[in-house]
Length: 248
Image (tube, rainbow, N blue to C red; front, side, top):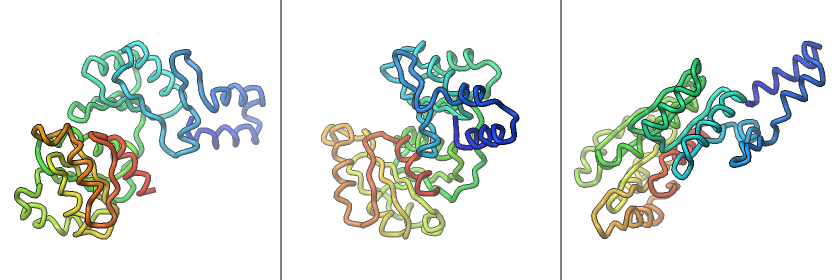
């Protein structure tokens, strides 16, 4: 249940359109709903402004479907991250009649109604083409949370003129998400060109000494340009979520 739904319920109660018993029944899942194997935080959208998401790895298809069904029933939007095409098919079949979209590059299932893109401009930048899957997770997350998103891909420091050529686009953003593997240098470069928050996303892209993204993570955490915040390795969802929170 989201904030708007609670406000409508309270107005209906005040106007006598629903009884106290009916209102209590609608609110009974607050602050969470216990499914036995999962406790759905149905209060999170009211508390945080953004609903909880379902992280698919480690869960059975049956668990994922059950959680998504309850989330869609109690609120307008539900996200399943790191979802396979097979998981999407299972969710689509279970939520017959509800809008369900699978963003294959982002590995995101979006179920329910998404808000219009009215919040300020989020720019998602990648160092290379191999970083695009993580960048898409960030971009789609920000989009479905109501943000205007632009993508700028393959502008890494190996050809730094490519990103320098996009200064007007960079400076027009309210938040910049920079996704990079290898040595993770691009966020520091971008942060030196803009006056808005930069969210750095290290990826596990790179050869042996990149240590599956650890080298990029440490490089970003040691950025010499101020104003850089770093999320976990390959955590596009966290970056898109944070960008949306900043825009609010």
